[in-house]
Image 1 (tube, rainbow, N blue to C red):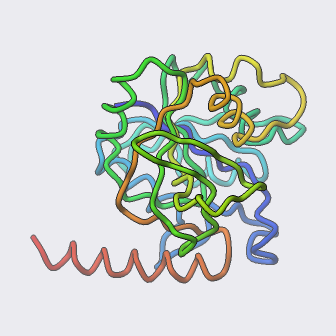
Image 2: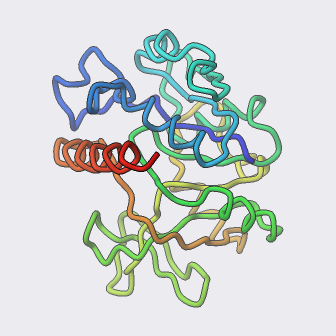
Length: 239
């Protein structure tokens, strides 16, 4: 299974005082830091190793998780350094630890999809990137992808069209060459990498059916907590 890079270096300004002195990944959900829920999910889906791309208060995450052995998953860290690199810059900085192909996801996302299936799909194409897409119809967040007959026709977080019924689910698969044009010392967003790959016909798609959860807002926090509580109850009732 591919290594997963988790982007956990943001400052989480939408959550106000909740994340003033605590990274978003360590927000408590049902008695445990959110990142532990994430890692438990990834481990259950066959992921053996993650690299946490951290910046703001990242040492607190490292202190909490250590090497991940208590959770049955190998955890490594890539620190942004003195300045924020943006999501794509953080991945470029972590490339020496990620290998030739890898997954990328966000530190505030809980994505209960079939990671092995996405990895297989990525292994069947020769392009540099793959975006997972979900038929959202504007329900869970603002749709930003035109997707038809297995192909992404348009993607933008700023220029919406009426044909955007899908959303970037939050799990990407990449080959390291996808980041070769990302600047070394100035911030760059992952959305720019996706857009560049799409223009160059180097972006494939993998559709997933399970909705996403996120903790980037107070409403998202509540929804994620409710879903995780239901999941825990169902798991504990089936030996």
